[in-house]
Image 1 (cartoon, rainbow, N blue to C red):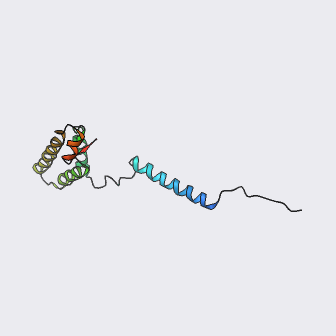
Image 2 (image 1 turned 45 degrees about the horizontal axis):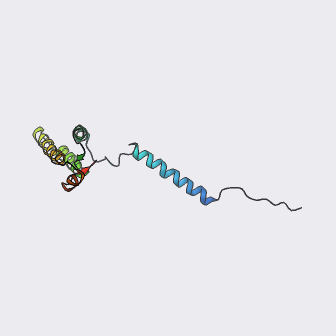
Image 3 (image 1 turned 120 degrees about the horizontal axis):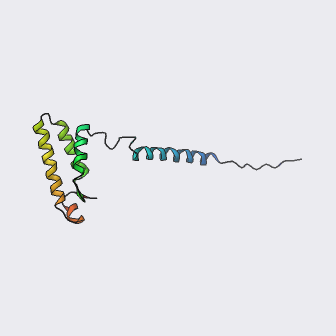
Length: 115
């Protein structure tokens, strides 16, 4: 008597693809919840705190991420209190320049980003 068995399992390709998808999903969750600081690794703690305080005043038209990074770099490299205040004043001028734009087109033409 010959028994006919049919396999009812998943192929190895399906298992590998599912494992890779799970790994990608875990990495995305870690990035977007802040567990991996790859987006803010260059920011100093003091500069980051000042930047957060200034972000409150942005409004719809805000400085670009490059402007924020330049502020943090200048603030972090400042050795005296006067140099830090100068970096803050320069960045506040950048915020004011961006806030002067009333619409998305004007904002983006000034080199700022519309949020």
